[in-house]
Length: 191
Image (tube, rainbow, N blue to C red):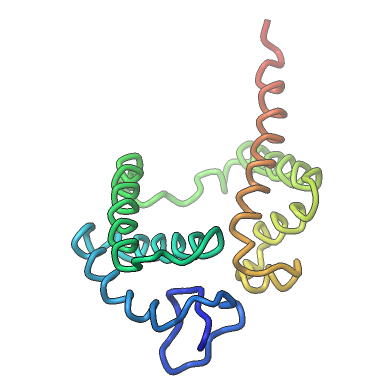
């Protein structure tokens, strides 16, 4: 039987090579309508895609960490409800812009342009000090060519699925480097 690891498999097409787990795609195809119905019952339409993606991700994590759930439908229902609660809890902290962000006012101010260039230099210097393949990954994300995740993964020689976790780890390192540099600068000239 075909192997399945993603909710993005299209029936009638061959299973992509990145779907290597032995979980039967017919189970996934059977769960898809249940997931859609449960998600629709839990959240407004605007959040359905996020919820469905999160549930499929939890299934992949479940399959990687242990055996498939003994009762996939019950597992899916419980996971949809848990992920919907998590999304509702985190969406409380999200605030939309009151208006669209204005064009960069600093484009005409030489002082603001100089400060922006200095921040960019500091950022790129911090990126170069990151460990492992983080400098190449973050450099690709900052690239003006705006490469896709697939292009970045191919360039780095890693799977596209590993890119998100690697990016999070690298951004955490970058955040720590930048915080350690900004804090001492903030105290200059005071005292």
